[in-house]
Amino acid sequence: MFSKEARLGLRTWIEIDKLAIAHNYRIFRSLIPKTTKLMAVVKSNAYGHGLVDFSKEIAALGADWLAVDSIVEGLRLRKEGIETPMLVLGYTLPERIQEAVDNNISITISNSFTAQGLKDLKLNGKVKVHIKIDSGMHRQGFMVQEMKGIITFLKEHQGDIEVEGLYTHFASAKDPNETEPTQKQIQVFKKWITAFKDAGFNPITHAAASGATLIFPETHFDMVRVGIAMHGIWPSVEAQTHMEKKYPLKPTLTWKTIISEIKTLPKDEKVGYDFTEEVKRETVIGICPIGYWHGFPRSLSSIGITLVNGGKAKVIGRVSMDMIVIDITDVKDPKIGDEVVLIGQSENEYVGVADMAKLADYSSYELVTRINPLIKKFYY
Picture (cartoon, rainbow, N blue to C red):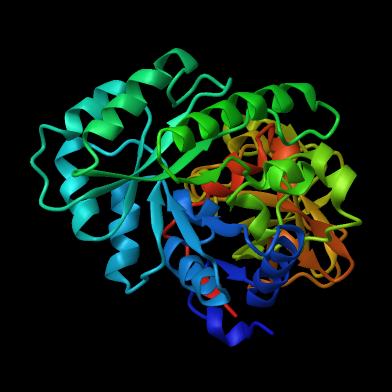
């Protein structure tokens, strides 16, 4: 259990449950073949859960690979002593590719311009690459008409470039009710796999992110890439509805703050910037020292829900940069210093990431990755 003494001196903090991480890891290991590798996607500060701490935890559990967005993230993990194979999913600037080579970090190549540029870099060592295929999402990746050209180029430069992986990304694999688009993308990707193997390459093939790993077992290939679901956050409402009984993921993150001030307002008083809300009764309010700078969405003004001493406390008025006001009139025995749960459990009440995201008109991905990375995290 997390100790209250641990957070002394902090106005807001995040608690990460290591047992929940291990639980989710075991679920994903159980649903993929033993021959399929598991890549833990730790990009974007591990979806707001802490890049270094989460990477150490998931690597210790046995993740075969880690995926980051940038060489900056990859180098940080190498500096922390993490030796797990690593792939940069995003764009790597040409001037930083030597750092990838020196630190055994694989990079994504997703267009001919970048591929052609590799031969002019005069790298000290062989660069490991994963070729990204555009199978229909039309973001990163080589189009089908580029297949022959990139394969010819890679065969001609095998002395400098190691084709380690071949992968794609699905546009709508989070919804088990919409299977046709994903099936079309699978067929495109399979054509690329055949072409690469016919050309003599034997890359690690991977396509499934969290949604496809859960919903489309035919997409597991040689490796899966699990990101947000490893934190117990479902990639979509449809995936949760369809799969949660079979795969009961556990949320790992709890976000808390405190009550720093309490006052009583007469009926009809107005609250916050621009007097955006008027209380309809005599109201006890609590001031909490967090706001949109910390990642609490401004769109939760007058509608957000927090939890105090097992009761719900609604946000009143405008979310400020560094403060929110909550209605604690019906909360049992509120006191200055009491913990306020922004995401997580308080006795029998619960506010999940998806709950907050829905109220804020965010996606769950957007919500957690916008939590300020400076907020102290406790892994327990």
